[in-house]
Amino acid sequence: MDNLILYVLIVGAIGIGWLLGRRDRAKTSEIVGPNYYQGLNYLLNEEPDRAVTTFIENLEVNSDTLETHLALGGLLRRRGELDKAVVVHENILAHAELSKEDMQGVQLELARDYLLAGLLDRAEELCVQLSQEPETGKSDSIRRESLKITLEIYEREKEWLQAIEVAKLLAVGGAVDHYEKAISHYYCELAEELLARSELSSARESVREAIGHDVNNPRTSLVRGRIDVEEGHYDHSIAALTRIRDQDPVYVPESLETLEDAFRLDQRPQEELRQYLTSCLDLTPSISIVLMLAKSIRDELGDEAVAKFIASHLKKNPSIRGLTQLIDLHIDNTHGVAKENLAILRSFAEALVADKPAYRCNGCGFEGKRMRWHCPVCKDWATIEPIFGLEGE
Ligand SMILES: [Zn+2]
Image 1 (cartoon, rainbow, N blue to C red):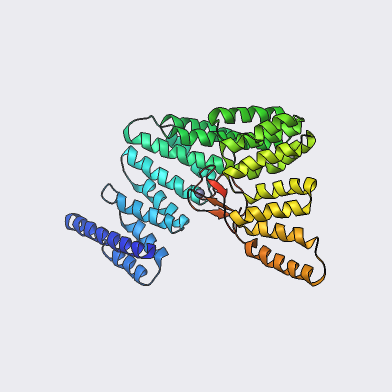
Image 2 (image 1 turned 30 degrees about the vertical axis):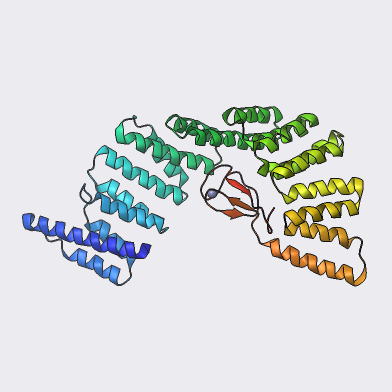
C-alpha cells in the first residue's frame, strides 16, 4: 500500500514541479523541465533512491510545496527508510524560507526521524530547543509534541529523574491521570534500581513519591514489600503485598514469591496465607495462586488433599499449567508403565504451552513471555497483564 502511495506522491510531486517549472519558465525563460522526466524515469525503473534525490533536488521548497515534501518525508519514515526521511526533512530546513512555526514543525518531524533511527542525542537536542520556545498559539502544540518526544527519549535511556521533570510539565497541559500514572512508575523504576544497589532508605523514599503520584499503583506495594523484606520488616512486607489484592488483583501473582518469603521469615501461620490466597482466587482465577495454595496444602495436608484441590479448580478454570502440576502429583505415587505414560503426557502438555505468550497489553495487543510494566510497543504503563485461560494463567 505504502509503495502505491509513494508512487502516486512522487509522480504527483514531479507533476507539480513540472507545472511550477513551466510557470517560472514562462516568466524567466529558465529551463528546468528535463529533471522531472528523469525523476519519473527512475521511478518507473524502480530506482526509488534516485527518484527521491531527483525529487528533493528539483522541487523547490516553499509554502506551496511544503506539504508535499512533508508527506514524502513522513511516508519514507513509515516505510522505515529513515536515512531518506532525514535527507528530505534536512533539505527542507536547509532551503526553505518558511514561517518560524512551519520551520519548527519540520524540526519536530526531523526529531521523530532521529528518534526512530536511534539517534537519541540529536533528537533530544532538537526537542529541548523546541520545548523552550514561548507558549503561544500553534507553537504551544509544537512545544507539547517536542516534550512528548523528549519524554520517550528519557524513557528509552532510563533517565527517570529527567522523565519525571518532563512528565510534570506535560501533566500541566492535560491528561493529568495519564502522566501521574507514568510518574508513579518512573519512581518505581528508580526504587527498583536503588533496591538492586541495596540503597534501601533512598528506595523507600522513591516508593513514597510513587504512592504520592498514584496511590492505587499496585507496583508501589510490590516494591515496598521487597524493601521491607530486605530491611527485615516482614510484617510490614505482608501488609504492603496483601494490599495488591484490593489495588488490582491481576498483579497478585507478581507478589507471590516475596509474600511466601515474608510469611516464612515472619513465622506466620500458613493458614493465614491460605486464607488470603483463597480470597484472591475469588477475584482472579490465577493458576499461580492455585499452585501456591496447592504447595501450602501439600505441606500440611498431603498429596491426596492437594490433588483434590487442584482437580476441583481445574474443573472450573481449565489450564494446562494446572494439568502438569496435577500430573506431577500423580507421577510421584505411580510406578512402571503408568508412570512412563504420565511422563509422556506431561511432556505433551508442556510442549503445548512452551511457546505461548503469558502476558498481553490491553492497550495495543503486544504479547510477551515475561511481565513488563512498560509496554515496548504502545509505551504505556501498567497495560500488560497475565493472559488467563487454557494456555495462560
Ligand atoms: Zn501496548
